[in-house]
Amino acid sequence: MMKSVISFLLLLTFSIGFSQKPKLKTTSLNSELMENKTYVGFDGLGNNYYIKDNVFIKQDDKQKWEYKNVSLGKITSVDFINPLKIVVFYEDFNTIITLDNQLNEIQRLNLFDIDSSIFASKIGMASQNKFWIYNALTQQIMLFNYLNNTSSNVGNPIQENIKFTQSDFNNFYWIDENNNWFAIDIYGKVTLLANIPPWEKLQIIDYDKLLFSSDNVLYCLNNKSKVIYEIEIVEKSFQNFYYKDQILAIFTNQQIKNFKLKLP
Figure 1 (tube, rainbow, N blue to C red):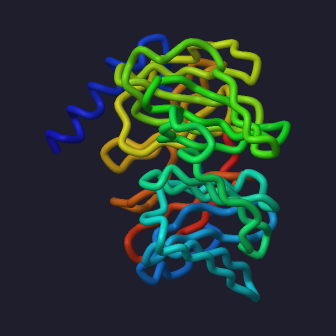
Figure 2: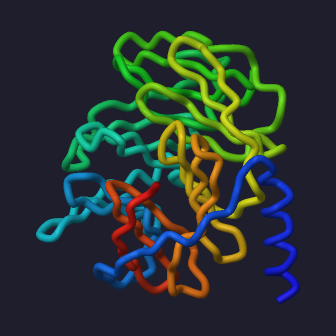
């Protein structure tokens, strides 16, 4: 009880300038068992993505595909904003793998072999045949052209420690240790979007909205209207969540539950 009270007070304290509105209602759709897999998310083509025993798995209603590469260590992250060119990142070996829609390997890039000054800790797909890279050595965001293996710095080095990053084709987002939410576009323009409340898990939806969890409560922050909504879910505890195309997936250690949710 005390933990819930403290979390609520912190939420109010850190969301100065944001107002609280009624809860957002969800409609239950379906559920499925997890089978000891880590759920990564889903795309707009009906495919679900998982990691199990360091094997990357793609699955639809009829088929399952797998990608495994034991020589590169543990999978750090997966980016599937383009389902036809999926990006798998292995930070321990500074290596980026791109896969086609059947998880066949298209390209392997060892950044140490290309440029010994790039120590990538964050990777994301960008537009114009490029990757977003956060270079931990220089604290610099970069755009890396994977066709000709050239890179360029974007903006100035980031001074604060980074807690979270996410990207889309045109923007690289990050949240620093002070919970400031920033975006930088492909031209190097940096925008401070908001200072957000304390959070445990988080997903950036777009330039104006993000979802975050705190003390097993799920919230939607609308940066344009300066409103924080609580999202109604029946789960008392959950490991993570994923949202896309008005579908909210809540996953525990046993199952995935899908809900219909329209964000304001």
